[in-house]
Image (cartoon, rainbow, N blue to C red; front, top):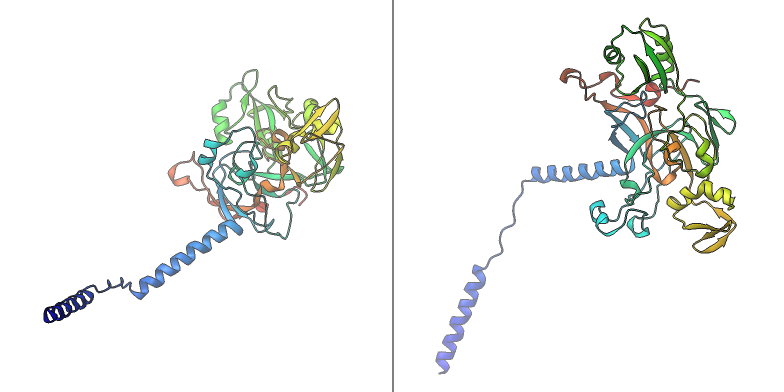
Length: 384
């Protein structure tokens, strides 16, 4: 028995040893050194590009005509993010997930991260062209709202008023740009083919007025002066639109008498600015306090209540800017959706990288003269 037991141990031990030798570790994939270097360089480059786009600059395609002739539809613009300080991402959940669980009336506090941006070396100045998120009161996080380009008309703490289309800030008239467009009542001579005229001057928007060959069309002042001497034009003069029937102003009952060319005055709040919260100020600033300050204010018997508590003053939490489009009568801007909080500013538009004309033929698709051009060159201020 002892012999059999020793034989069993010897056989089992040899089997275990043989089994252990057979189970060798699988050899690791041997990636050639030059491929490893290329892969490492690719990963570093991707990371570097992500950092650049988040914190330094970005490229955005403009699809609307609200900034013509400074920025054309189809322009791919440079956006400088470090000028005003790069804004940190604010979204927690993807928009499609958010829409499943939240309503569309107001933005729940947990649906976006707190606003914060790195220190910049400048703030948006008057006549700067900036890219902003549309300051609408919908349910998506701020940095996921529609990006649009506008020009700064007034800064926090300024008082702005528009008189016959001219912008006055703190009682000083602000010079416009040479690319600024207005609507003009344009009457062509009876024998002129309107379609040919519109094609020649590359006019893609506007409306017909009552009467034969009468239109309301957008032009710069320089173009309007030139057309006044054109033998095809019978009459051309500046159009001053009245208040639109469905135009909703974000400044309460005070704004009901305003028109797009005669607007204000408006005192722009700055962070820390304190106002007396009386019924007049409540009506004037209610929209911005509710949707941008995120404060539930109500009025009862001429008394103002914040979260159910009586208040006689209010201190603003944000800096606000007044933004306007360059195509003054064919744009939506602060006259329509109110002042823009600093949190909605993405960066400064400094130039055009590429420019595409979707209506042009294949050989003329790219507007070469606009490529790699600065905004200051494309849209100089008149005083310069």
